[in-house]
Length: 119
Image: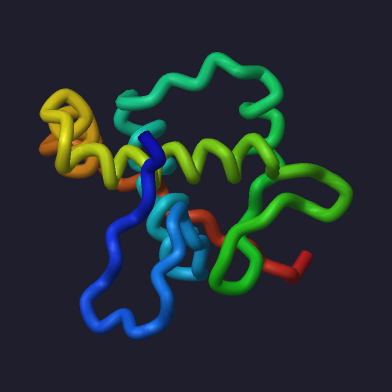
């Protein structure tokens, strides 16, 4: 079965099947990935993916790979997380895993990172 994101209310243009990535959906998926990894709801065993995550940085109000590096594996992981968000409405196992990752009572936010250009 082909998974597509649901049509939003008020959508007037022709609806396209699949997933359309916008700035908002990318930021939401990035924050969900961060939360799932920090709360041990997702364990990453792929060395190439870990390598790409080390070079995945915030640029302005978005995220992307550092210049000269790739983020293909991260993009596919973010797409899988977006698919989980759609599938959680149909499968209780996905719903439980996804909601536990988002609403963990023991969540402690990470320490902030400050970057200063003054040396």
